[in-house]
Length: 210
Image (cartoon, rainbow, N blue to C red):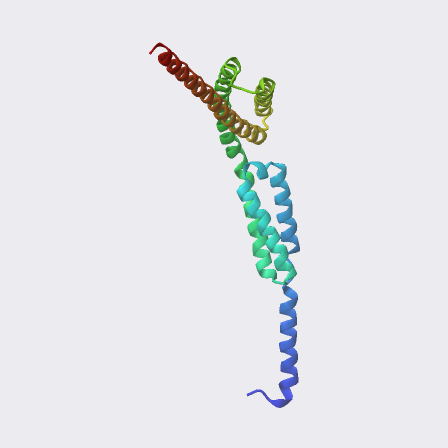
């Protein structure tokens, strides 16, 4: 049993032990610097473009670590910074394979978009010839824009700006699909009107000769 005379000494020892233990729990400053550097390296190597999921997770973990430091939860903060570093490294490692895969997909999409472009041009020519469009210049202007966008996407791809080329060809494809639908509808409407007129004329002729 602890003697009364030894009680102050015991309390001092306990206090010192607690103080030393608390003193050992420090913010993971070095780990945070390392994680920040890893994230900067990942961005410099375009991980934000070609490994966006992993990159965002790494950013989120580093942000979480800073919040934990502010809450003086240093142990959890250290674990979060270490995880951020691991995620950043993983993001870097996935850049090249993801970039190559996206390049191949973009090349295929450009080929498909070129076929779609030819269809739109053919429909535009028919629509203008049959006077199915109300604004010929607008249609021709759009066709010109599509040509410029296609050339730009190909140039981006050749310059190894794969993400930019991919984004551009996706947008162009959607615009071409939309224009194809509009031109198809215009031609169908024109043909329908023509058929109605023809039927009406035939009815009048039939009535006249009856």
